[in-house]
Amino acid sequence: MTTTDETWDIAQVARMSGITSRTLRHYDERGLLTPSHTGHDGRRHYSRDELLRLQHILVLRELGTGLDRIAQIVDADDPATVTALLRDHLSGLTAERDRYARLAATVASTIDSLEKGQPMTTDEIFYGFDHKRHEPEARERWGDDAVDRSNAKWESLGKDGQQRHLDTHREVVEALGAAIRVGFTADSPEVQEIVAQHYAWVSLFWTPNQETYTGLTQMYVDDERFRRNYDEVAPGAAALLRDGAAIWAEANL
Image: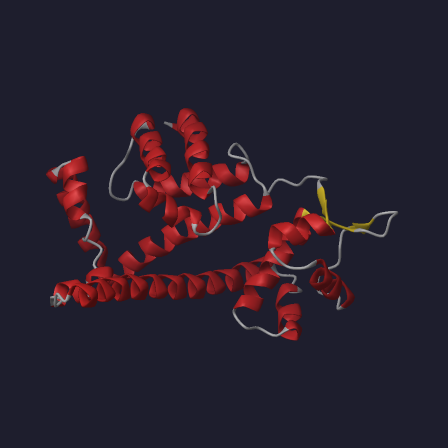
């Protein structure tokens, strides 16, 4: 990761992270999150390293971990250990988010059915769990051959491979959200790395060229359904992917 001398004061960090300045001071007093330095006016300042540590703290807090245990985890000196722990947390968060999204889709369909007095078929009851529900639209947009090849590739992955593919996309989405919150720009090495991961994810089924890849990421912004999927982690995530993709595609495709 690129290092910089840029710092953010406690008020800025509070706004970016959504927690209070009082909580940040409490974390400092406990030795959980020490600022990089304190200004002449007594205001705490944080570097990018502290922002990443705070992100880890907040993830653990959302998972219900106590502050003493959080301190033990984030103080681990081994980067491989920290990365493994973060991957475990990401997997848990992703599974929980996707589970609630599927439940919400199913419940919404059920409500609509009850209000209209129309019984649901078994397919409709489990509509939110079917990855092929957008297939008619996909066939119209990209053609039968492309969709048939995509479906065949999907089936060939098996359940484990399919889950890994879904997890990879969620990692991309979460990484874009983190990039937005930290303030990375589209041309930053961090965002360019995310775009490269996204392109590799797309290319499992279809290898786009520069024009088609930038067109795809533009669609993520223009189509509210796709935009919502990215912007749910942080407003502007879809646009950041599009802008980063334009830069990456010009240099690599």
